[in-house]
Image (cartoon, rainbow, N blue to C red; front, side):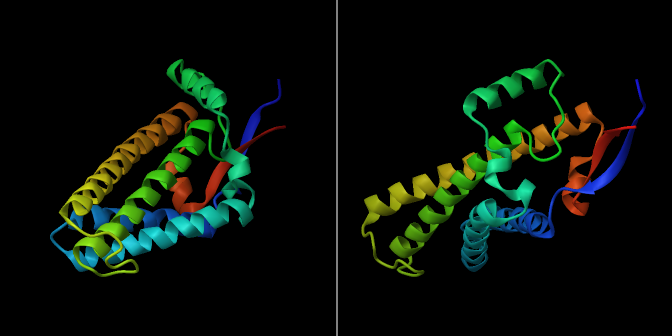
Length: 192
């Protein structure tokens, strides 16, 4: 059998990498500021909203590995892949693996709910933002706040699972996926 050699290829375009790290910073700022620094919390939330809108659009018009059609798989394929991960026999993917694709969708959904509920809450409690006074009353504010907090905490749980998945895939395939999200480069295996 011929030897396998590796060369570096660009997988993650600058827009995806910039989006990723800006989202990390904005979510950390929003989550950690909470009720203590309203201005920072609100501005970080707006940044998250803009980033999510960008990523959804980029998922349709961006380069190959940024597009949803490249990494969104049916639930059966995601579950099959997770079974392979558990058996330490998961195949390596140059772009996102099926579990990574599912995680991106889950994060985009929870972030959208978090941002939308945050905008509604800001308009309900502070009569500020793009939707001031859309909802009124303590009951509405309490419900919206509960939704906002649940969505933010669920996002944090997903971030933890995402990091665990990155670690497992990095170890299983012998590559530094965090470094790849900084440089955009991954190993492309070729047979010579």
